[in-house]
Image (cartoon, rainbow, N blue to C red; front, top):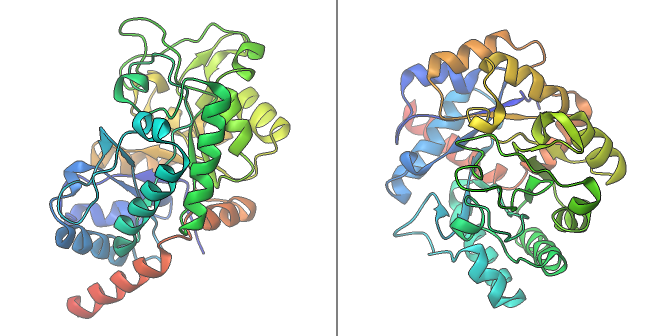
Length: 330
């Protein structure tokens, strides 16, 4: 299959004709949905069918952040009320399998893939601890629970995306924690990070299909770039030392932690060390301009094989929805 290298978003609960060029663009790898894209199961089914049909591609994967708790984009009739990761971690292994089963069953009719699990420690960070998104404060316990979560995902036919490498969970001070709104700096040494935040990633990296790095600067490791743009973190440590062979997918380039440069510059830099970059919550024309200008827009054969493994779950259902939409459209 032919795959691009950018994940994009759309504006509403229906696909606007102007967005056809966005999803059909050869550099578009997938679509990421948000709460604004959902009102009901029937509407979601129609939207997914329209996206995959109008992409003109054999398969266009569609992702969502459906973690549980405060980070659950689709809620209400047709979807389980998934508990937050802190509660899930406290409940233990049987609860993890039950929640993953509910999650995958909810998404299966739409062929959707959840970007999960969060592997960050519960260490006081506003966007992690503050939103109950971590399974444990203890590195070893978190590693065990993250590994169990990945195993459960695989048991239920779903891929795993670990986030946010090498660890977003530490507290950096008031208004300095959330990489959506600022540029967090973690002053610790590599040794300190390896003995704490990195342990869940080390435990599960060989099993996960994808890993998402954090938009955080770790100056004692790489003083020049956030982890999501760093050859030290992504190539030397993640690829070479940890032996990760799956997809590296950037966190969204519209976040403050990704820096102040132009979107094109950020996308180009991100794709030097990430296989795929997320460009969501951006004006349509800005995104299209970047897609048109990207010098490296297509996955190579090795990347494409890893991407196919990551996005295999839901592929058959997406094809079914595409066919049903085609039948009604013609």
